Amino acid sequence: MRTVTVGGQVVSCLGVGAMSFADFYGPTTEANSFAILDAAREAGVTHVDTASVYGMGRSEEAIGAWLKANPGARDAMHIATKGGINRGGKTGRTPYDNSPAFMEASLDASLARLGLDCVDLYYVHRRDAGMPIEEIAGGLARLVEKGKTRAIGFSEIAPSTLRRAHAVHPVAAVQSEYSLATRFPELGLVQACAELGVALVAFSPVGRSLLTDTPLPAEVIPTLPFLKTNPRFIEPNLSENLRITDAFRAFARERGEPAAAIAIAWCLSRGDHVLPIPGTRSTAHFADLVRGTQITLSDADLAEINRILPVGWAHGDRYSDDQWVGPERYC
Image 1: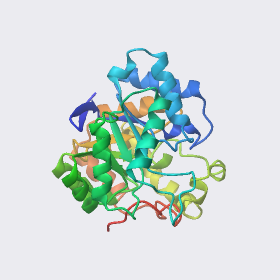
Image 2: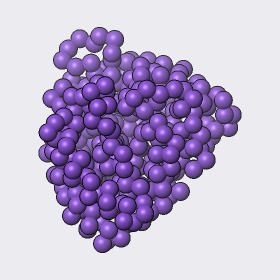
Image 3: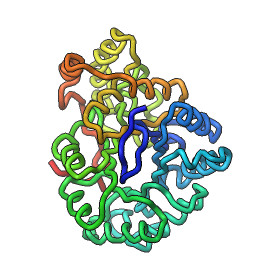
Image 4: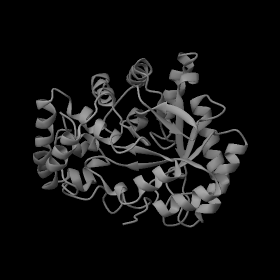
């Protein structure tokens, strides 16, 4: 397994996106989450990425239960979680709260669910635009000083915001959607992370199933709260996106590889600092994702993939208007 450095810690180049441990893409069980974590450990996948709001703590609880059931596993795993979304009724335009008091209370609750004294990485899940980023970074730095997290990160921030935060305290990672379906990070974020020595943690690297051999069936999408209002999964965009990605699936088949593996290999080709964190409820699909870490795409392969899925091919924005509240737009 290739590796990526995150805040001075060496981790696997592939991680587990644990949003799928909380019914986000369909119902699951703790036993199913355990199976994914078992498969990750066996494959040498050491980074596990969760958040306080995934199932309102359910994802963290599953990880905590697995760690408790597997003595010694903690030493091999790099555990990341996120805070900063206040579902408890913060007043104002958004539910985002990055105040030091809220971030620490959220982390304390996460640590209790995980059964840990310290996480390896603690992100701001969404930036509170009402606070200067320097104050937010300073608050996170104090959590490092207190020994509650080894490193800090941010999710869905702009390159300029990253530079300002990094000037206050080293930022270990920035999480952003990045895949063959969503390439806007190439307009500054990929480069800024590489320059500053920050890991770019790529979520949804297989395009929320569009870049796999088995995209989510159209009849399932209305049952998933996030996707049923997401522009890329609403007709006529969905049919167009499936039609276009059929050629990508054919490209993978011709090479005897799963489409998801090619999508992961493409992400890894973007730089040694890129760490994709796909989520799945299927151990068979997880094996396809791990396979992607073993594939090196040639220049000819990359050129052909770019011909099949040129920048901007996707129909529909990656978020609806409501879903865009919080992530920073920078281009």
